[in-house]
Figure 1 (cartoon, rainbow, N blue to C red):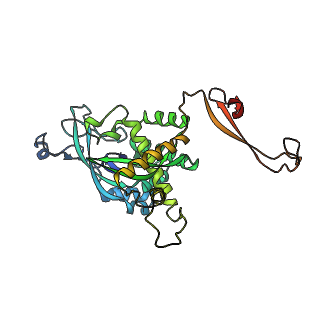
Figure 2 (cartoon, one colour):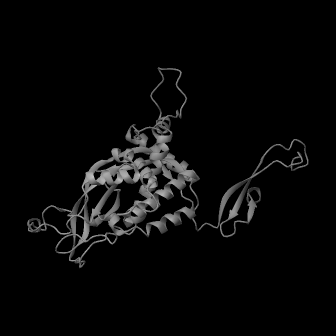
Length: 347
């Protein structure tokens, strides 16, 4: 039997790592490996499926095209272990008695196949609802498949927006154009609820000092933002967001134009003097912050209503030529969506 697992790497690079356990491999570490000092480098996981066998399994499950793009990699996971080796996952069906007593949490090296955000979204959405015979989905893979469904729903509802991201690495700060999820209060609650269901194996690769209380929600948002960014960016790759310049001797591209181009480019980075980048980022966050949904504890929200032209052809004020659509701006109570107050009355 084979059990598939998934780890979303939000620490090194945004990638989905797929790995698997096999009941046909030995469950214990060889004796000579057990003599190694606990302070030495992590030992290889004894019943992790090899990368070639993993490719064959994933190819039969989601198609060889997706698997061929995956890159071989490895990770170190801190897992509950006995004196004989790491404990198997609950989904792995084994024959005979297995010692399930936990002696300590120990690091183990696992072989993985890494998928970039775009391929990861396609892979997770392509998984069947029920795995074939002899195969099981681990809790981590089921979790990220659910997160992928939420990402696809947000994309279908166009709940995303462009932004400027500031990435601090050591002493340098880089700026990049990116697409992020724009979550309504109801969506924020769904993300919070989903994050609370994240299995602990999902953050087993993180250093102990980074395992904060907000880590599951941060990882979920990290996954949503990167998969949405990859999807939208790929759809815009053949779209010209700016008109072509008539004068080939025109000056260098301005930061706003560079930002627009970077939203549809494989290279999202922005280049300019540090002060200009900082001022541009601040102004963009101020401007874009106005379209973000209100907090859930707000008593009301702004909205508009689009009324169709009347059937009799007369306008609402009794005039003729009632083919125009009427847009009304209102305030809507959050606790009673039927309560609508015209904006001019409030003003």
